[in-house]
Image 1 (cartoon, rainbow, N blue to C red):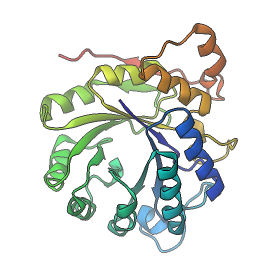
Image 2 (cartoon, rainbow, N blue to C red):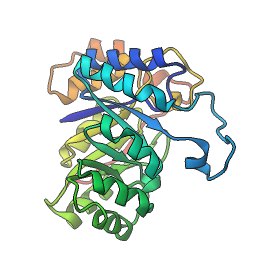
Image 3 (tube, rainbow, N blue to C red):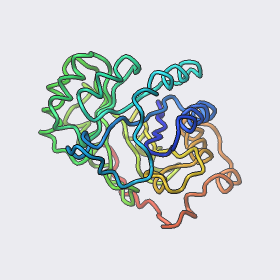
Image 4 (cartoon, rainbow, N blue to C red):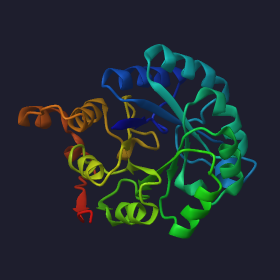
Amino acid sequence: MKIIAEVGSNWKSLSDILESCKKAKEIDADVIKLQLFNSSDMYHKAKSCKTGITPYLNPDWIQSISAYCKKLDIEFMCTAFSPDGYKLINKFVETHKIASAEITDLDIMSTVNAFKKPVYLSTGGASLEQIKTALEHLKSCHVTIFYCVTEYPARIVDFRHITNLVETFKNVYDYGYSDHSLDVLNIPKIAMHHGCSVIEKHVNFTNYTDTDDAPHALNLKECGLMIKSLRGDEISLGETKEKCSWQRKPFNVKAEIRYYRSK
C-alpha cells in the first residue's frame, strides 16, 4: 500500500511546505504531493482569479523541495495543470499525477506520455470513453487509474465506480483512490478491499484553518492513525478517541458509505 499525503493549498510559505514534508515522513507516508498551477492554467485568464488565501506555488521552490524530500527519503510528487508545468516538474518527480479536471486535455496527456514515467490518472466524473481516450494517449507509461470523488468533502462514497473500472480494464492497470472524505479508518480500508494499491488523502500539517483545502484535510494525528491502520498495525479504542478529531469539525460530516462487494 502506497500512501500519498496531499498538501494541496495547506501552506503559506516555503517553510510550511518543508515542515509538512518532514511531518509526512515522521508518520510513515510514502509520498508528499503539491500542486503547481497559476490562474492562466486554471481559468484561462491572464490575471489571477483565485479567491482563496493560499499563494500559488513558486516554481523556483521546486528544486529545493525535491532535494529536501530526497534527504528525508520520502517521494516528492507535484500535479501540474499545463504541458509547460509538467515539463518543469518532470526532472524532479518519479511519478506524474494527472488531475481529473485535466483528463480531456490531450496536450497534457501527450506531454506526459513522452516522459515514459509512471502516471497516476484521476478519473473524477469522467466517462469510460474519456478514460479510454486518455489511456490511449498514455501508452508509453505505466498507469494507475484513480477513483476520485469530486465532492469536497465527500459525504457519500459510492464504490461501484471503482468496481466498474476494474471490470472494464481488468488487470491491465493498477488502481488507486483519491479520498476526499473525512473518514480516517473505514473508507480507506474499503478502498484497499476493492483492490486499490495507492491511497491519496488531503492533509493539513499546519495550524491554518483558512487555507483552501483545510475543511476537508486530515491533521497530522488523523493521517498518522489512517496510515497505521492501512499498514495493519493494531489500534486501541483509546487511541482512536484521542486522535480522531474529524467528528468535531464545524460541519459535523459523517461519511455515509454505499458499500458494494466486488464480484
